[in-house]
Amino acid sequence: MLPADAFLYLHEKKLPLILSFPFEEERGHVITGRGLCYIEKIYDSAKVILGRFSPHRTLICVKNNRCCFTNFEAFGKSYSCIMDDIIVDRGKIIAAIPQIMNSYHRRFIRVEPSAKLPVVLYMFSPEYGTMSVTVKDISERGIGFLSPVLISTGQPIVCGIRFPIQGDTFIMSKAAVKYRIDAPSRTPLNIKNGTTEQLHGSLACYGIELFPHAMDENKIRIYIMQRDVEIRRLLQEL
Image 1 (spheres, rainbow, N blue to C red):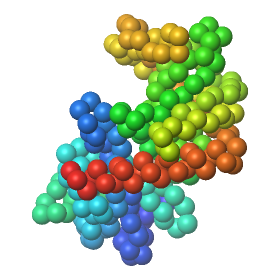
Image 2 (spheres, one colour):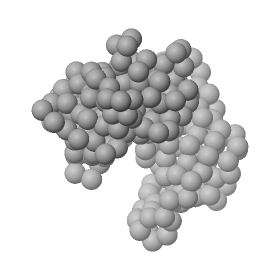
Image 3 (cartoon, rainbow, N blue to C red):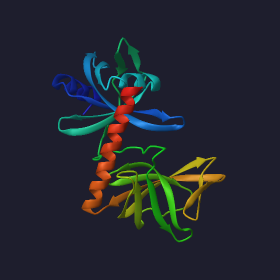
């Protein structure tokens, strides 16, 4: 299916697009915000006018970034695309319909924890013993984090996760390392005695899949719902 056909379908059925965009929660800590909008008009199957933003501050964030990640439902399937070259005019967005869209398979909401109230992941390393890293993002069934320690993909592990809910909540979960992406950095983390130090070198970005007990999965879900509400409130206050 062509992107133009999908956008025409969304317009005719009055279905929303979900926009995702980065914004700064506090200085140096960027998180992902989400909002809804609707296609109000299509020009020559090439351009769209987007309006009815919810929350309304979504428009400001998209304007500041000049592009956004978009996902939507069309003809019973989920798709995603990137919209760039955005023009904001009188509370509306004018944008070209993307030439490429992809199937969207993510089932769970993913949030970035607060810098002040982080989520901490604990794992065992043959070299360092028990190590801890700050979670970059989390969903009900997955965690993303940065680490200088080499971890083999596909490797089954048992991990611990500490959440800032109900004072302090700690759970254990079976997990599997799904991917590793090298990410050069001037200030990576060194694992030492269960804490982290800054040193010169390089980090890798890891993604792990979680297989928690049903009771623990519910605790993860509660945290994500609370954090998602908090992020929405932050957007309202921008």
